[in-house]
Length: 463
Image 1 (cartoon, helix red, strand yellow):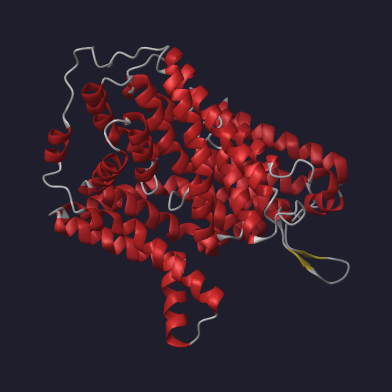
Image 2 (cartoon, rainbow, N blue to C red; image 1 turned 90 degrees about the horizontal axis):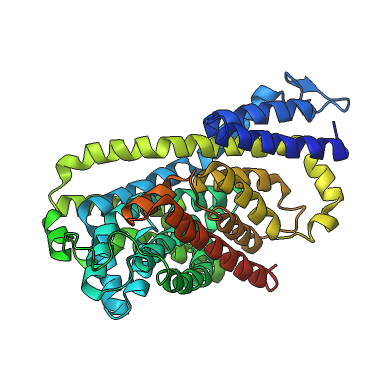
């Protein structure tokens, strides 16, 4: 099947996949794999390996699926694992809390909403936003008591700060997966730079929305609620002693510096041993491995060596489902690239280019709203977009990185009842589900719209 009929089948396949995940609660891995196989067979991929009329070998559906699955693991598996391990080490040692404290001191105590938003943004770069909210929520509550700020405003700002870096900035697994799938895995520094830039309008929009909605909604843990809150000192005491600022920052900043040096070496055309060292150490896998080593040193310094095995094991259990869903997204992308869909889109690229950067945004937003997981939305959309990048005029590293941003913006639009993060924010924020829709859901809509608006403006100047 080719042409418009196959495009209709493709759209129906995506709808079926969404319904399977959201309505019938079938695991995303199974849903994506099943849809990929059926779509591939309908799209003309043969049941078994065969030879074309010109003597060219044509892979059967089993080999196409296997190739898509294995290539994804080859390019991204270790990177995602190392990124998640860095986050776990920072969280376990209290380094994430130390980073948050540094942000508060930088912003000042007179701007608690901005401080908690930036705190969340920094902490969620290596830590999942769900666990980041749980870790930072005691600080949020203590700051509400100390400053008299609106609990709702503080909750929205913390959630938004965490969410922005969660979908935009590696080493969070989603952006790493999308970057590798779209061919900019070796340009993670570029993705990080765009992520930091696009975060600015997202954070600004939700900051002003938080200030507004905080005046209209009252949570049950406001400053005058009489609830006993763990003080910052008590929270610090629960970790024994927080690590120093430089050591807390090192697992994040050192990999960034190493990747930056690799890019500088390439741009300036360095040669010899220095160039070799920069290229080697700046490879994302090696750079993040250095970050992991620094995280282990943190564990040793804080006397938590005995928990290293358990923490690593728990991290691998957490990352496992993400890896498999990411690989399934790679399968879907491989299947699409093996059908006539890419040729059809290439032949009609002019009309699709009118949608431009909004295409990945809308696709990710539909997937996010339908099934709840931002990571699933990011990885699945990236898998769909990968074979279409050239046809849509996004073949350069800069445009591919911007496409990662558009996917991330869609993957935060919107968080509602089928998203675990919605319930984390609502419950820990002392709000009812109805209040959650007016705060978390509405704020993520504002965040997504502000982000894609900035991405669109940026796309006008980048090629």
